[in-house]
Image (cartoon, rainbow, N blue to C red; front, top):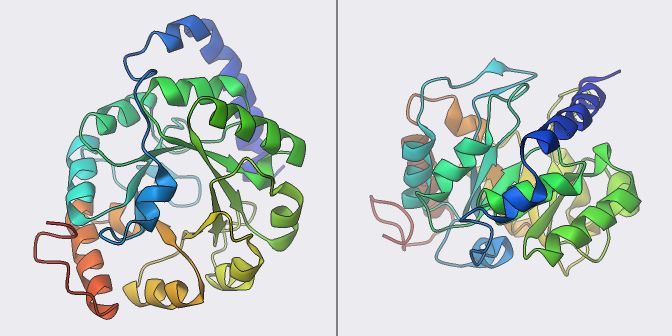
Length: 276
């Protein structure tokens, strides 16, 4: 059993335990449940923003502890001020050190979309995402059957949430792509081996249907990579570890985005970041 398979087995057990703690009725009473959501697609395509989804991640199965000191409130607000189009907040506790409280705290700090980054296997988790203030959920093709992707995506959209489908190869893309999707992300990290290659994005960008927003995820540490990926058709990027491994993720993100803007030949960014 590889790491991804173990995570999914554990996640099914975790969800059943979570259902015992909070009923669906409890989730629907949340202050966030009825809030109008932000569109991840719209924010990624907004020309006044960077197209970057910045991530808050404390640890990972492959790297262990990445950042055990940064505050989710400070980093989230700093990411927004730096010009992030959206946030990705890890809510898996055992493998990634996250929590639902992290997303709720971030929601109170920013007015940009938030992706609940977790291993979604059950409709209950989508209701949870809505109740904690998320705007988008992640579905991982490698962890779900095509039928499950379709049903979970349909359910999410019925709640007003957008859906990001993550793929790692052409087979996953062809098998799992369906109509109720908003964003397709190409993960350059193989979740079975944890090896990273940005060539994965280049190989798949032209195979992703044009009706969805295209993003590249993982292994991105150089602003020039974003420039190259923009030229071949990507609309956005998810970057987390590159910022989180520093003492000040929000400052690292601001410096990265300023350099990216310079390389793109844009003049809309001052020292304070995008849109300021």
